[in-house]
Image 1 (tube, rainbow, N blue to C red):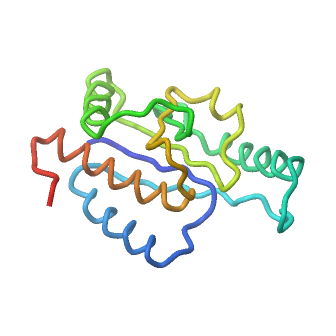
Image 2: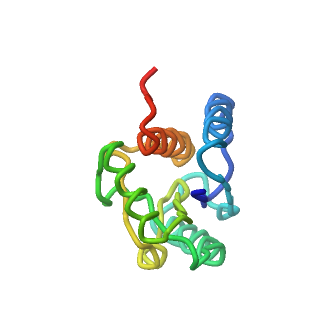
Length: 161
């Protein structure tokens, strides 16, 4: 069975996103083993951070993410400069990974300031879910929906409701 880890900075705070994420946790259970790993965001960031504050926060968060990485997983960093693919393309990619013996996939989501270059360098693939900008909390929900959709496609099941 496919093992999917979502490694992210911080917790989801908005109730409507928590509700959606919970729905997709339940939907994903028959298709994969889902694991969510949250690292603490950088603390003491000023209310209006300057460039140096942002870089410091990204660096602190990046170190926590790097410590949480498991080299036995195929690591996919979600980044706005990554490759944009379709839902069917994601399904094909997951199928290809499984056929090559990669049944452990980790999706990495940064915090509000994004991800540093070290973590991107440790990734196996850079993926963009869209060219639009979303909050890191929304990306978790969107990612879970897309993983669910990909797994439905992989199982030749309908996914439009």
